[in-house]
Length: 356
Image 1 (tube, rainbow, N blue to C red):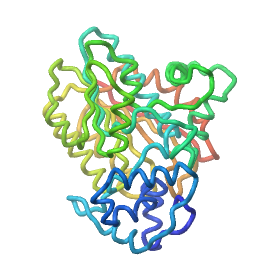
Image 2 (cartoon, rainbow, N blue to C red; image 1 turned 90 degrees about the horizontal axis):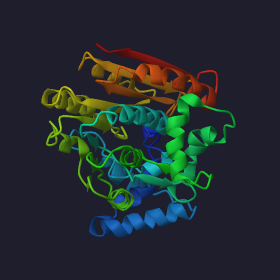
Image 3 (cartoon, rainbow, N blue to C red; image 1 turned 180 degrees about the horizontal axis):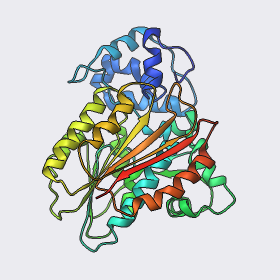
Image 4 (cartoon, helix red, strand yellow; image 1 turned 135 degrees about the vertical axis):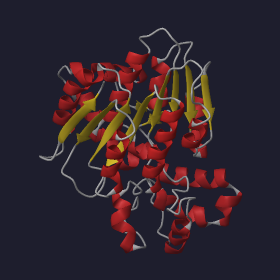
């Protein structure tokens, strides 16, 4: 879909458009996934695609290669993302704004206490994203997310803490880079805290290692959901776990719920933050309901930027064991985001919680 052409299997197009797979790069790398060169020299093959998209050129459609790529399955029987997802396509969009607004509020609360904290990011991405070139320019989703907030002339007290951190990464006053969750966590944590960052994609893993260095930071090329069980309970008995997969395959929804169920058995007092998409498919709206059954203490914050329809029309952050101050922090912030990021009359927000 990056090149504007229809997919080779029209019967799958509606599902593909609705689950975030397109245009994330999956179609662009399909040929290389099916090509023996990709398997023999994956770094070089990915480099070809990165260079091609960064140049502004569009990959040619190859139906045989696309079919070969889509036919490969993951362990649960769903179609695998084949490491094709690159968050840079979506960096700084409305979903990132919501996710990072909540993340900053959580970190501010947790680091106010002197005891050390572990931050575990199961899908860390590249850590920092260049908005001037490469994948971020293909869709320029940041222009309808952080870009709108950046241009807002008036004061935005409810969003100021989050925006101050984005400004810190852009000290010249021009919005050229966007901070991923690992950068925000590294900036807000202290010398005795520890970051555990997991990323499977080789290129993003390499970038993450370059962008996030220093004492107390561990970057690992591994499945973060699988690795989580080995980290819990954490040594300091305090942890924030961020879970935000791409949900490109339906099994992601089930895996997130199952992972959290096991994590809460190992470490019931941890704080867990789960990002989820608002999409027109059954599995998406079912996830928050499944998560509410896992704990008595939860908060569910949703931001919808347009009327429900094809593609990502909003997202949510579900927090287990949230700080009691979080609703008070988020209520005015969500109202501001609806006003600033709303695209039509369908824009709105929802904030529910049960904190005992």
